[in-house]
View 1 (cartoon, rainbow, N blue to C red):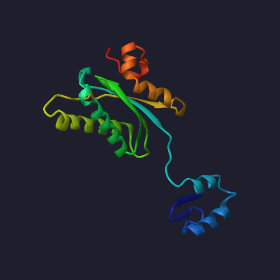
View 2 (cartoon, helix red, strand yellow):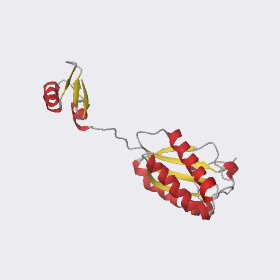
View 3 (spheres, one colour):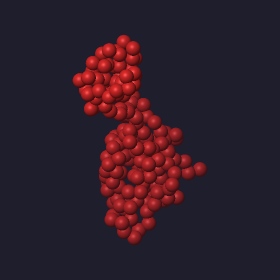
View 4 (cartoon, rainbow, N blue to C red):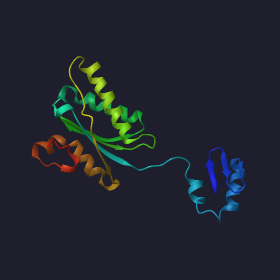
Length: 179
């Protein structure tokens, strides 16, 4: 059993910490005994391949996302995601709700991601873009995991929100119900 770091490793068998060079020798001795050998020698940091489709609405589904603030709002959402270590794949929506597809970070929870995005974007709108005007998000949200194979389909759906809503070609599980 091993615990590997960039500075070397701790062998649980001998209960000693070894330098990188010494640790390689220790690994070669235990190689046949430890099924995690390959994983430990190759995995140097956390790795995830998680994709998340998030949806949230404006307060009471009011049409608050107007064309004059949409680009700035989307930029703020992308900026906050980047700051939290998430990679934005697509962002889109209509007057009363937002869809976001992001590669999910190893360092943030779903609830914290949404809280930070909603808080920072709402603050930007009410304090810088349209001071004194009403803007607020609903407290709830929807979040869906997305397989790697479905990323393009979901991203296209998000980027084409206006068309989908106009043509009523919506995917109901990805839309927030008002009923």
